[in-house]
Length: 167
Image 1 (cartoon, rainbow, N blue to C red):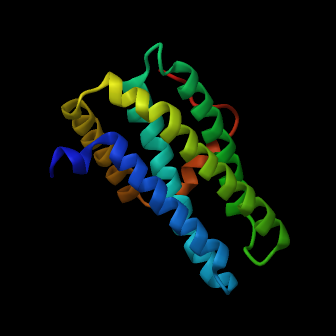
Image 2 (image 1 turned 90 degrees about the vertical axis):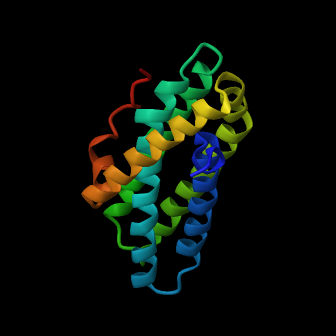
């Protein structure tokens, strides 16, 4: 892989677009079965993405110039985890699912925008291309490990009491 393919910022941006596309597919699914299957896929993808940010990316880029953005991002992750937890327990044909899903989609898009407009430009200044590529490789490895264990979405159910710590 080239540095561009593993650049941590580029990896996260690509995952943001993939997540937004998948959430749109969930929203437009015509049957409850299709909606549930797509939502499970989206929940797993979102969980893997969030966990790699919290465990690999954020700690690596935690410096004075990024701290406020990171603390806000962790609070946004907490909100997304709480919504995921609720949605995993609701049948997609219920009206409550649609309302909560709409909020999840809006909050995910807001979170992506905030990271891309504020955090990622700072990270590009703090880390050179090789450092971002190394960090991206570490994130992709962590994501693959979490996905391989199966059903990553289940991990968020125990992570809704408070935001992950910024270490």
